[in-house]
Length: 187
Image (cartoon, rainbow, N blue to C red; front, side, top):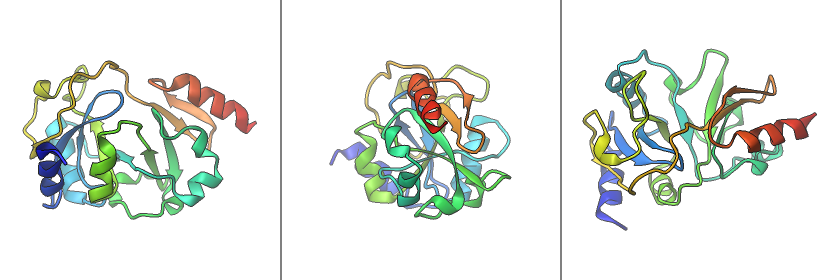
């Protein structure tokens, strides 16, 4: 286990901790998905209003497997799912007003041991609100408690966001073709 990974695991043991981690698309600000304080701190760091963050997992909960999400994950597609379909708890700050949570099983290999050690984590791009995403850890514009640096990200697109209820794409990004094929298969 790398020193950086150990630091991130340790940092996430403290309420309100925020770490910088790579995803398969870009660098993100992350905290424990169950940590309300961390979610609020991330919003403040990004200079945006508090609101639900993406929750990154390292497995496919049984109810989501039944929905066919194995066709998307691990992958670059984030899906809005019912909170009750998760097999783990999340902070209320990560639940939208409609009772759903944005979830992704990201294929970035360096995330797997982190999530295995601490449980599901939140994620949002590490840029300040309205600015371009950062593709290298050294570009992070905000102070964080630990950094998991895995070099330059090649992709500057956020994940595609899919609404299962409406069977629509809410945000186009990385994984768009996969998301569209999945939604077409539901009809």
